[in-house]
Amino acid sequence: MIPKVIYQTWKTQNLPSEVYKLHQKMLKKNDGYKHIIYTDEQMNDYMQSNAASDIKNMYFKLNNIVAKADVWRYTILLNKGGVYLDIDSEIIGSLSSLINEKDEGIITAEKNNNLFVQWALIFNRNHPILSLTLDNILKAISEEKYKFDHHSLTVKTYAEAIFALSKNNGEVVDWSKISTSTDKTFKCNNNTFRLYGIDYNKYFNFKHKFNHKLRGRNKGEFSKNHWTEEQKSKSIY
Image 1 (tube, one colour):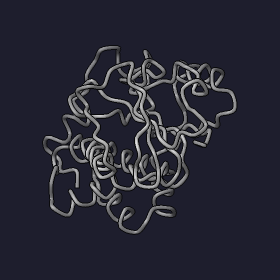
Image 2 (spheres, one colour):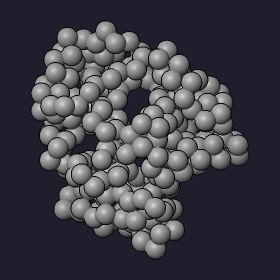
Image 3 (cartoon, one colour):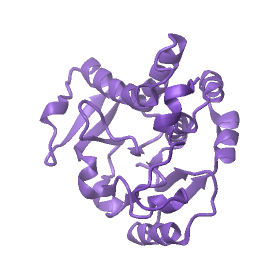
Image 4 (tube, helix red, strand yellow):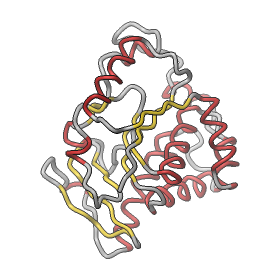
């Protein structure tokens, strides 16, 4: 069974009151779930103490906090299992009606071609998709790929793991045929994963209405310090 823990990360645990209330509403709908927010420093401490040496060395080589958060989310779910959620995303449904007792992992398509949502993740511990994703990131860095492309380094590599493992187990995930009615379980080495709809079929929301409050910005305002701008001039590793 997938552990009933929701992990998030942010630079501080002192969140705007609107976001705190949103979290309380989320937890009310998901009674029995623990909710743990790791600060940047706590994230570093976790990786220092709990990541495999090659993953730890790679993590501390990264200069981009968003890429580091991606590696951390894959690592903590690989080690512990549970649910990961971006701090500016929200759970709007009951996870008990989404997650089945026999589920080992639930993946869902993004609307972007051949990609899968990783701003929210649902996995049991030791899942091979997470392990291969981390291996893919290690390989990309060893080949000095994606130095200025965070999305390819830590998001595309997740999709590549899903495609590769399904193919290796004699089943093909055809992204183009995924719809909101898709709900199929695939073999994955000695494990399984469930492919469920698009963007978790509204159990989750990509951006909640208070995400600008987290960054101290006006609604709709774009920051020149956003990671998409930073990576254009600053190498990720």
